[in-house]
Image (cartoon, rainbow, N blue to C red; front, side, top):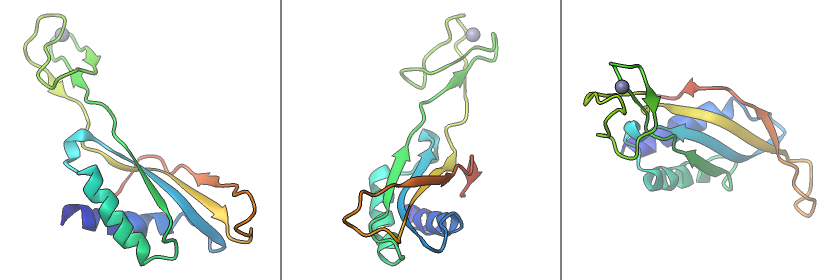
Length: 134
Ligand SMILES: [Zn+2]
């Protein structure tokens, strides 16, 4: 299952960003529409993977960037409503730009020294940029 191996790879990557004393709260990823990942399937796979990690409550947030087309004739770049939308210059050809990325956007952790009754103060430990997972 594609999503299951993605979730396993993602957890391996995320582990590098969680300090030993911290608790993983939220993982945010960006998955382009061209990547072919089913968000629901990835959420399900993540539930299975996190259940075997030290952070069984860790949340996965999936961002999906919009489609983008570029026109080879006039160089216009835009976000179309449909994939076969034509450029305003009249060119019937357009190239799909990006959309196949799978990127780790952010990893949010909380200090495990705080008790559960305390107001959790999640902190973003860092944006690792567009680190490609696959
Ligand atoms: Zn054009």
